[in-house]
Amino acid sequence: MERKWLSLVAVITGIFMLLIDITIVNVALPDIGSDLDASFSSLEWVVNAYTLTLASSLLVSGSLADLIGRKKVFAGGLVIFTLASLACALAESSLALNLLRAVQGIGGGMMFSTSLAIIAQTFQGQERGIAFGIVGATTGSAVAIGPLLGG
Image 1 (spheres, one colour):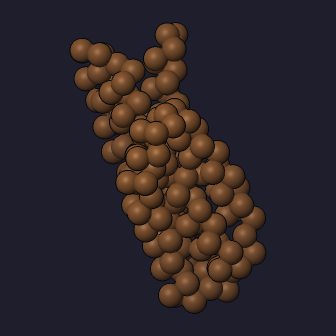
Image 2 (cartoon, rainbow, N blue to C red):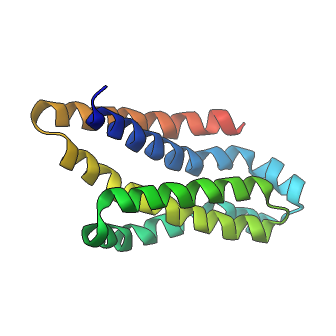
């Protein structure tokens, strides 16, 4: 397999995970609330902390990628996202979970802001269209599968 297609696999895996993470918790919120004895407002922040930090880190991450490189920012985001995901699974309080979800969102924002740029930089011509089509299919699948896995 050519290196550019391996890059695509890495990018779509990252996109899949960061998008599935938005929708997977929605269905799991009652169980999370029960396990952590969390209030309704605290449970709202399980979703909000992630999406707000993901969205707010997009512009900063994109600018950083222009300075130090897209792949470095993507890789850094992947590491942050993965470690925060592991820490979320081990969280023992709703406050810890919400703070870790915020960190997870920063990692997700770093990946998301660079993913399409990496693909545009890596692929040319018809292959670029194919690569973006695969990303689109991955995006739709992740959003649809999240609630199924969360419940």
